[in-house]
Amino acid sequence: MQLRASAERLLARPRSLALVLALPALMIVAGVVGWLLDLQLGVDSAVYRAGAVTLLSGDPLYESNTLAPEPFWALLPFTYPPTAALLFVPLAVFPVQVAWGVLSAVSLLAMTVVIRVALGALPRPKGELPVWASPARVTLLSAVLFFALEPVWRTIFLGQINLILMALIVLDVLVICARGSRWGGVMVGVAAAVKLTPLIFIPHLLFTGRRMDAMRAMGTFIGLQGLMFALIPSDAWRFWTHTVFNAGRIGPMHWAGNQSLNGLFNRMTDLAPWASNAAIVVGLALAPLAVWLMLRFHRSGRPLEALLVTAFYALLLSPVSWSHHWVWAVPLIMVLVSKLPHADPVKTRKRWIAAGAVFVVFVSCVLLVLPNGRNLELHWEFWQYILGSAYLLVPVVLVAVLAGRWLWRNRENLRGALRDRDTLIALLRGRAVVAAGDDAQPPAAAGSGPAGSGAPGSNAPGSGARRSNAPRSSSAGSDQR
Image (cartoon, rainbow, N blue to C red; front, side):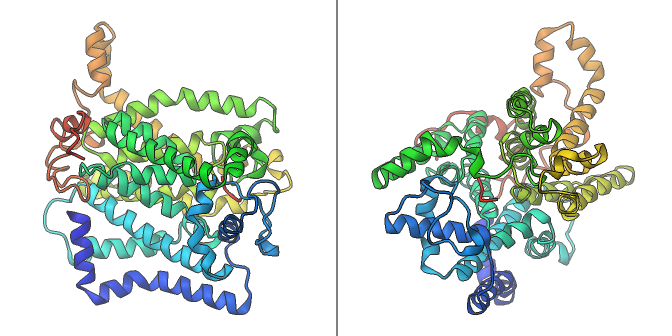
């Protein structure tokens, strides 16, 4: 198992272990110092902790727009499902600032895990790697570099849980489910019980042939909701019948930080009453394209890219996708950079430009620079709408480029397919002529399989993809701001 082997090698190397733990330890120290100096650290983590304290004290979670245990600088409503309050209970042990430090430390470790799993899911470059390019060193360097991304440092600054939720999903889909474990899908269910958006990864499991994993994910989600109905029935009932529909508790939909289709439509239409419905219609219209692209990646033995399609589609479709939700930029940049060694000199420059552009978008803090707040977004100029939609334009542009290249490279086949229904269906499913270049990887390139799968070559086209689509036997395995 690649992930387990990496963990064992890390534990056997005290210096490497110290480097991995250095930044998380620094976060805990910062939390303790913040507590001693009474600093205002972690607005959202303060609300998480307050939700846990409120749950333990038996007070209602959703009756008012603030919670009694919240500090004066974090007076915000608790918008998460009641299950989240239960899972936040460990934070109640610590003072507010220390709770931020602990959550930040766990978030940084979670990002490190995502980076390592993503490395294992990507094709290994041909030839002998230089010393600096070993998986351990790349993981450490990437963890430090990605801290500069606005979604990452803002998640840490606010005390958010986006990195932790991403780690749960990546581990579950790319490691546990790929291994055929009977625990597959459980962490997806837990992530969805904390924040509802990860529910979209249950259809992802279904579409990729992991029916039992999808059932376990849904069962975990429903089971946790049932537990909360047993523990705090009034709060659970109020959340699912009232709070979940109250968008006002989350924040203004038109804020620049809301990088979803819903946020874009509300900004561009001056809060027209039909804006949110129009965003839903457009989002649903994009669903067939998202499913098609996700399945093409999956069938060509590229599970990480398939997962990213689902993740970014969820960010576009969600009513609220604050800028710090876009932590999926971390594995996306890794995918783009991984393609650089496989390209000829002509393509290399274009790929450097693509990878660099995506990195610049997420490190630029452009959303913080533009006029925002107090409805200023409703009076933007045209160029400001473009810059102010930078995050959501990243997946849109990437998909448009992929679709355009696929259409161009398959133009001759498409002309014939338009006269032959069976050929057209086969082409759309990727079973006819597969486009060269990035749209498909040869079996040898995917030979390492996903991290932790323990099955070399299991993702090669025509082998692992078909096996993963087959049913398994029973023995196989809202934010505060």
